[in-house]
Image (cartoon, rainbow, N blue to C red; front, side, top):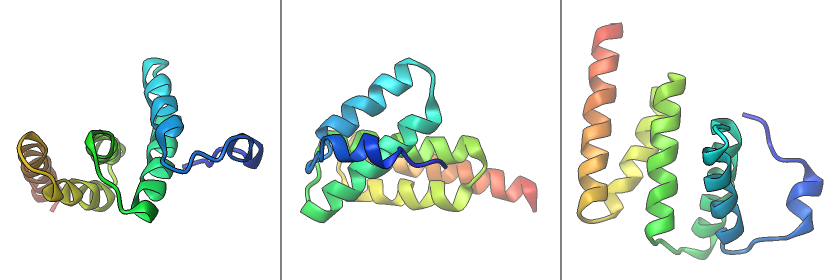
Length: 110
């Protein structure tokens, strides 16, 4: 996965990842999954440094789990899906569903 240029990231240091989260959503609307994944990953790194979790965090984690599943990187997809277990309600159900899907894909491969 490519990283955003240092110029792009140095222009505005987005401590809480809010700008990166919005930029990721913009990339999704432009059908640029790779750049969206980069933005969500960076946003999560910043949120992790601050030890904050919210609906944006869950959205980013769900996106990345699905992104890596589609890319065929099941280990990374499961890593993100397991992070959803930290949330309650629909996010936890989403995690369980994603993990079951990925286990089924692995079973078919082996």
